[in-house]
Amino acid sequence: MKRFAIATLGCKVNLYESESYVEQLKQLGYQEVDFKEPADIYIINTCAVTNTASQKSRQKINQAKTHNADAFVCVVGCYVQSDAKAQNLDVDLLVGSSNKDQLAQLIDQAYQSNEKVNMVQTYDDLQQFEALQVHQFHEKTRAFLKIQDGCNQFCSYCIIPYARGKERSLALASALEQARGLVAAGHKEIVLTGIHTGRYGHGTNDSLYELLKEMVAIEGLLRIRISSIEMNEVSDEILALIASEDKIAKHLHIPIQSGSDTMLLAMNRPYTIASFKEKVKQIRKLMPDISISSDIIMGFPGESEADVQTTLQTIKDVNFSFLHVFPFSKRDGTKAETLQNHVPKALKKERCAVVSAQSKAQYADYIASFVGKKLTVLFETIKDGYAVGHSSEYIQVRLKGDNSLLNQLVIVTAIHSDGQVLTANIGG
Ligand code: SF4
Image 1 (cartoon, rainbow, N blue to C red):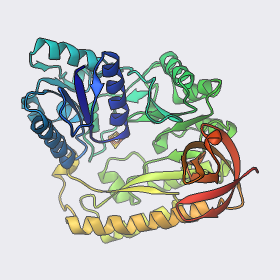
Image 2 (spheres, rainbow, N blue to C red; image 1 turned 90 degrees about the vertical axis):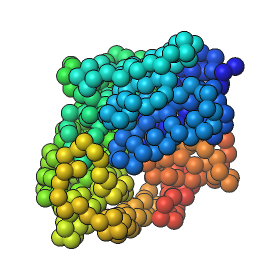
Image 3 (cartoon, rainbow, N blue to C red; image 1 turned 180 degrees about the vertical axis):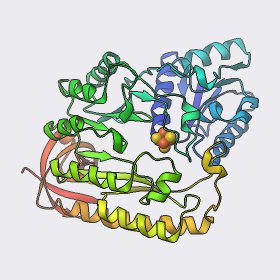
């Protein structure tokens, strides 16, 4: 049996896509081995979000050749699509951001024919949504369903629109069919994912609202989660639906990227801090306990000490439950690369540390506010005599118990918080 190994860099969408490649290759009779082991075929699912990510992608290609100089090497994804240098890579199969739904077949054909193949399409040709296979995942309880790809936003720091092409969506009927397939395969929670998930259905007659409404009716599906949604896409009808349907997770991850209007303008983000705060107020009026988390970039070119203080104040005012904090990282080919006044690395690190500490404190306060309250938890694993899972708000909760709790949606009451995890008793 021919052996393959896969290395995945970057985001959750890449991880999702890699899972699909693994599944497809196994179905074709290939055996998966660890990337560190000798294999006949190596796949590198690349990332280009920063220059460092591209460099790491190149390193993985070199590592593959070190493990087996004669191996067949396939390089796929954002780095291949967006970086002209990638076009000259000396590998056996190059696939950009299209034809990925056929990756296993392409590998199989190219491997048999022993010819070098370049399948990279131009940016303008990246128009079709490719539905990947999604029926087997390592993580049993929760499954990811990719419903959207590409982005038309062109934030000034981001290469993704060039790497993944224009926005496009999986048709509603296919999305529902895939969701039903995941439930039939035993998954209880589905996370709707994409590059710009809130734009699902734009350009067609479908919409995220319609999809959520239809998914709520799927029998056996206990929870639906939206991986991330931009502020401008949190519509009144989506909010009303989340508030009225227990099945839809009470957690919205809304990237803010900066708490300063000056920085938002430089980043080409399409909202102001005032409008962001207004939206959050509207959300909390309907769902006071909902978790609102976010992404933030510190050290964007031109960010002053005053911008940092404004950002910290915004984080406190919005009262985010937690933040993913990233230092700005220069990416060739983006508008931000050409901006003046880049922030020194050490200062970026310092600013990230300050914001991360604030985020940690806010998360501890947020989860402590649930002590004495009821939560609905979907249990996923057993550890040290406790069943561990996530609440609707994506808080990790543990409850003394055994395997019988796995894959069950259980109402619990939180009795203790250690700042990161809640301990609970069964019942409301
Ligand atoms: S919305 Fe902005 S940050 Fe997100 S993928 Fe599109 S361009 Fe990149």
